[in-house]
Length: 273
Image 1: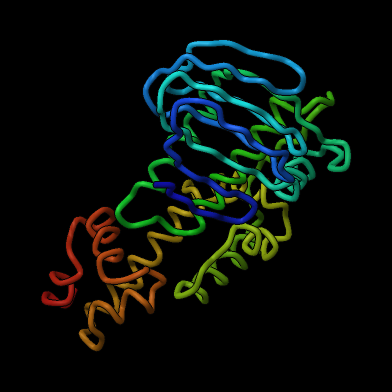
Image 2: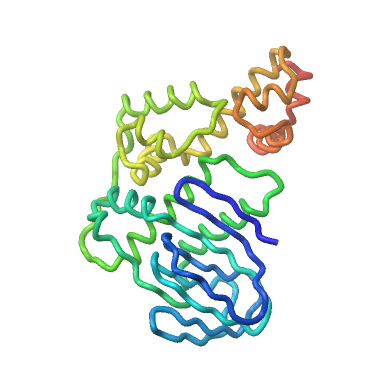
């Protein structure tokens, strides 16, 4: 059974594929097939070429938008498919100083890329987790994926612009104020970047340089701290506090409170601290 999730410009599906032939029609999105199942002998036909290989856990195929392909495996296995929208790729390109109208990717067979693999395992963990992480985390992974594709696999050459120095004090103050005012909602990477007045691809790096934390971790910690204060007052139940602080439900809040503070919501409420 397929497991699927979507974030801003990124769709990910974990699918069990049967032995035999799989045809993939041309897509409007750039796709990466990440092998997570048992090894299989495979034949890939893509861009007029045929590639035969023993496909193992961690192998990847990069299929640019508009390109169909055929895969044939000798055994059933499992694939993590990541689809990146052209809009997300263009956003990453613009942030890196690349002409977004000229950014193109070339097909690649049986890639081995430690950075892509790290992102893929994180996405697989999100799909299989009992309770999903914050939407901001998925957005951040999607942008990291798009930025890496532009950096390493674009067909055009040229120097890239890399942000340094962090956010200015006024920029950081605006972002922190915005996060604090919207902790009960679904915060997105693009909207936080817009508040700071920088590209989404730059915002991730600049925010971490300024605070020492990735933005999704900062937001989770702020939500946990807001929840702790509300629970300590004893005016709201745990489920109500979870909703008021942007968590899915009481279980979601409990998981993150144990991870960040090492205590349960019930204990915080009972102690009043």
